[in-house]
Length: 465
Image 1 (tube, rainbow, N blue to C red):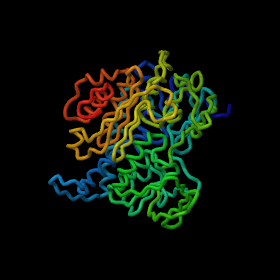
Image 2: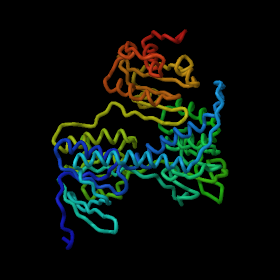
Image 3: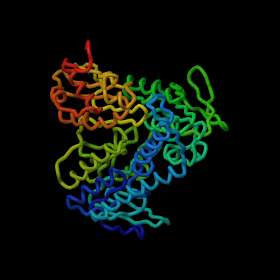
Image 4: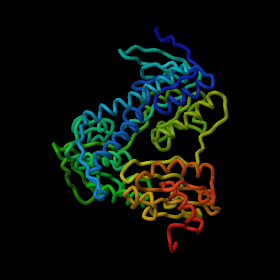
């Protein structure tokens, strides 16, 4: 052992203070463990500080700014003005309040928070590098690793923080770019495209696949594409970004090369797990070809090291990490538990919004299942009519026994339907259960009941079905 490497003993070590990490720390503390949490940057992690929370706040602001551009004449004339400096002040204040709230919870739970970057040096030890380069060595009984993910970089489009940026920088621009190009048409790309189009930018999305939101239901993707184009967003599908030259982004497909005028280019091509930064292989953990940590249903990577959140396979979502945190904390504390969800809801806060929960009947992997589905259009929804947008739909999916197994929706405010859909699938509700549940009128939630009525052969607000 090198002189100066005398380690302090800790009971349960959590690495990462994002939604997965702080939830794991709080759960383990409630179960009687003495918890130490190491966070390299900000309590709350990417989601709270530079991801979910600021992006959703910016979406709401963009919606307000866009009110005056509504093509429907409701008898109200509105003009708006956006001050991006004040917008950023508002978002930073919101983030700070939420981060302080999490810190308060950790303090009340007597979690020892250590600021620094932890790296495994062996199966039961980490070295924590603090500000100034000071090292602290910790030996642990159990560890839960929740170091999250980082934006994917493209070698041919290196970010410089000014003309070429990643999603985290784009969220806090102090101006609205005149011409913005987003390289990537996943959920991050389409959400930020929606924001800046409503704020006044001329926006173009470049996506190498042949649809927006690769992996999502194709009907939802096509409907979303139509909605984004109505906002004036240009969409280049099947193109790859090749290089950036002054104020132009060069793109190409198998047949041609083209250029897009761009004051600002945002690389939003996905995220990668932060496994290298924590040196997790030194703990004895194994990595999958994707770079994710291999874990079992209890989230164990080794006998005493657990990995959760974006480090593991599955959608990189805060609510997945929080759910996995409970599993890992329970198991580390000697309780029986396993991460075996029937569904993980996916929500895209674009315009229109998208929800996908459970089985998608259009995917080939489910082609041999005897599935039934019913699409209820919002043109028959009184609430959608009052909201001024009835172009979307819900699609409810049931198996041959009539059990609800899937749900897809697109339209205004459909994000709020994700909870009921996930609950129905997790609890194996029947279509009769949903159809027989009294839903408040007029609400978007009624459309779920309408879908169930349609599946049962008794549609109420549709004729000839």
